[in-house]
Length: 329
Image 1 (cartoon, rainbow, N blue to C red):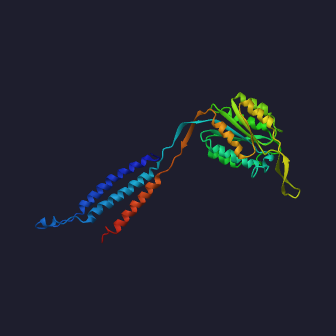
Image 2 (cartoon, helix red, strand yellow):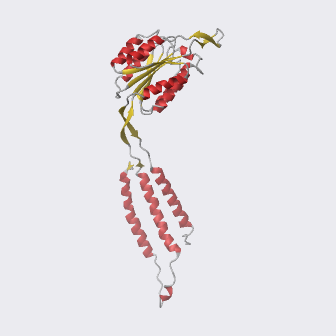
Image 3 (cartoon, rainbow, N blue to C red):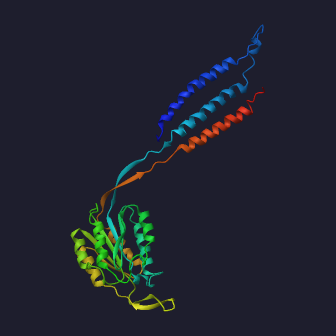
C-alpha cells in the first residue's frame, strides 16, 4: 500500500500536545480531602467511569488517527506485471457480405459464424487473437490481443451493414489478416478464414494473398460456410416485405482448398457448427510458443475504510461523553 499524500502524517505530531494537555488536566482536576487516616479508603476500588474516561480519550485519538490516514489517501500499488504464457497468433477473417444472411444456419450464416468464433475465442485463452471482416472491402475490426473480453464485445457488433455487402473480396480479407499477423511475436501464426461465396471483388487475388501468407510463415485454415445444394436467401419485395427464396449455394471450394494447401493449412466445409470441431483439434495440435504479456494494475483508493472508522470512533466518543460520562455543571 502506498499513500498519495504522505505529508499528512506530520499531523501525528499534534498527539504530543493533546496527550500532554490531557495528563495535565487529569492532575489539575484531582480534588484533595484532608482526613485523619486513609486506610479505610484502600478497600474502595476505582469506579469503572475512571477507566472509561481514559478509554474514551483513546477512542478520540483513534478517530483522529483514522482521519489522518484518510487524508493521506492510501492506495493499492499500481505497477506493470509481466508474465510468459504458451500461445499462438491467430487472426479470424470473417465474410460479412449480404449472402451471409442466408437462413440455412439459424438464425443466419453470419450469426452462426459469430457464435462459432466466440466459442473458439473462449477456448483459446492464451492466444493472441484478432478479427478482420470483409465483403466488397476489408478492414480490421480488432488487432491481435490477449484481452478476449474486448474482442468478444467487438465480435457481437459484427453485421452485414458494416461494409458494402454486394460483393465478396476473399483475397483482400486474407491479405488484410496477413498484414496484421505477419509481425506477431509467436512462432506459430494462423489465419482462419470463413466465407460462403466466391471471390468477385477486391484488388488482391486469393491465391496471391495465400502466397504472401506462405512467405511470412502463416498457416491458413479456410472454412466454406453453407449447406450442400440450395439455401433460403432473404429478398425484399416491392412492397417492402422480406421473403426467402431458395438459391444455389455457390462456394469456391477449389480456391479455398488451394489457399489452405499452399500455406500448410486445411479446408473445411461447415454445414453446421459441429463441423468446426476439426479446426479446434487441428489448432490444438500445433506447436505453441511463449508470448510475453503485460498487465497494468490500476490505482485503487483505500481511504474509505479509514474515513468510516474515524466516523465510528468519533460517534462512539460523543455517545460515551454525553451518556456514561455526562457531568452536571
